[in-house]
Amino acid sequence: MSAKPVPVVEAIDVKKTYMLGKVPVEALRGVNLTVQSGDFVSILGPSGSGKSTMLNLIGALDKPSSGTLLIDGVDISKQNDNQLAELRKKIGFVFQFFNLIPRLTALGNVELSMAIAEVNRTERRKRAIELLEMVGLKDRINHKPAELSGGQQQRVAIARALANRPKFLLLDEPTGNIDSRTAGEVMGLLKDLNVKNGVSIIMVTHDQHLAREAQQTLQMFDGEIVAQVVNQE
Image (cartoon, rainbow, N blue to C red; front, side, top):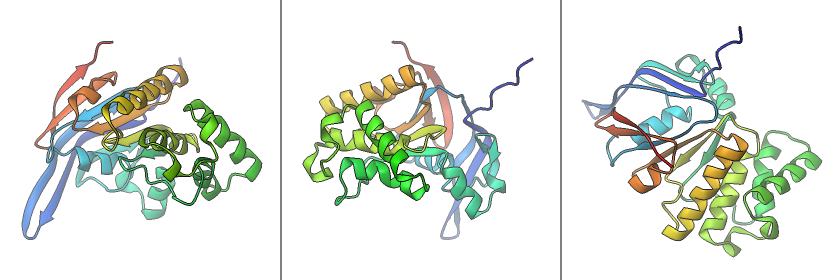
């Protein structure tokens, strides 16, 4: 009998409380969720719903106050700072504002994360080119960010996030800094990566239309998941 696959992310009664001066603020009030390998999940909610707190926890940037949060089967609450840094290598981060290095080309930006991970130069150059071709930027590999459109910069950021073969991509408002037409192109790319390449994706957004592009949407309000919706094609 084959072993049950380990979810890429699993939250069990996760709570997070911050102190605002002397006043405790409950950012998360007992969140439960499971994201399996190959899933495309959006976390939808207005400002103050707890989705940014959830993003920080899923990204191993913070720890829950109580409950259990497992990333690839590892309980983040039991990890020290160095172990959390290692765990973050399993996550491909994609940000709203791209966070590309201005003086590096598209190729250089994608290579950089692999250089930090001590991948040899030949291998990282080959993989960077393959990834940029995968995201439709074969003819832009030697262009710097200022020479690229917003959508192209986000494609570079997605290629960079995939460079070290993460367990999943974690996206924070990935189309918040580009126009609606380009946003549609980026979402098409993400859906292709998910369906054709089996890339697991967790996307945090306040945009209902964007959220519906995922396979399923978890709706957050006041620190809780209040609904889980399976989206139709």
